[in-house]
Image (cartoon, rainbow, N blue to C red; front, side, top):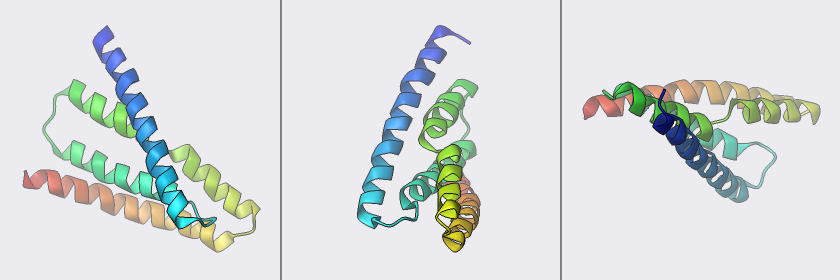
Length: 121
């Protein structure tokens, strides 16, 4: 890999993480509940975006920068798991199960939607 690609990953990954923070906070502020709606919104929108990117004909480097750097930094598996675990610690078992099931089902559907949209172009 070239230095330009590494620099692009750092810069675009940084933008993805800032976007994640902003979306998560905006949604969480509006929802104001113990359920992690901010993380759910980030991960579902990220699934649509990654599905869209994967449905396009992109060069390897562009796909790497858009998919891995931006979307990889934007979405978050670890926060999703930590928030689910936190719900179980607080004995909110049904919300924890809902967080798992809804995230997976909507995530797969969102990725398929993104690919479908890309296919229309």
